[in-house]
Image 1 (tube, helix red, strand yellow):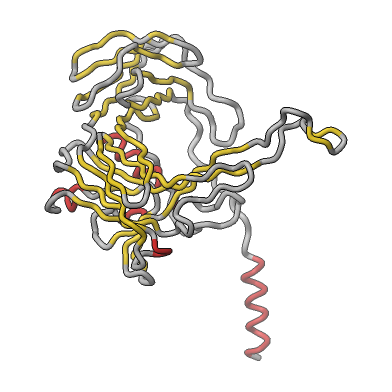
Image 2 (cartoon, one colour; image 1 turned 90 degrees about the vertical axis):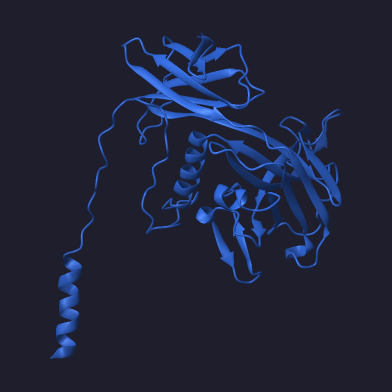
Length: 335
């Protein structure tokens, strides 16, 4: 009798299962403001209207707005509309200042956003020789700064390797099996990220983990430096090494393909950009599916990406960074 009841019960329960389509909140069109402050770029923002996530239409630019930039609460001037919702003022932002943008739409609606452009840290980057204690005998990379981080400044870093790959000849170069004179292969530059390993707790663990196989902390690139730990570290020193960079240290050239490079990305950001970048990476980690549509993290909760635009969406954030080519047994001044 028990053997009969169990299959019967399973059949009843299975019959009660059905798919439920849970709709998200109704779409509301909102203005979107996007702009990145950097010392080598003119003050620029792009304005557009948001679009439904389910649609494929391109964003509609906002071309009739009044845009004013300010520095430390003092107006710098009104930006000119260039094209497709891009507004620009012929002034480059400078370090250690607070910048803001005020936007008035034709409807009278106003937008506002601000961020602090931090100083570029002075110091040096030291690359050792290959070390057998590191994965794949990768070298130690030591970042030594001359001063602590400011309260409104946050340090991020990333390790990358550039590789050049041949994608064959462009269309029309091969006729009847013969290569036309003057045709050369299409060489493309690829940038691949490395995991960062360190024995210290100086990197924010939000996108990292403890790797018991190597007894080190590992973070994906870019990684956030914890201000509380870093500023308490005498000498302001960070020592890291790549995790998944294999031999050789510099990708070797092949037929018609130049050698690659190992690169350190080091950048300071303001409070708004810091919150945005951390939330964007967290949201990416919590995505339910991967690029091919397969389950990636089905139990994660959706993570909203931070926006500092009042009465709208988007980001007006400050970033001050450099790319440093890493070579064995070298020292690079940060300047």
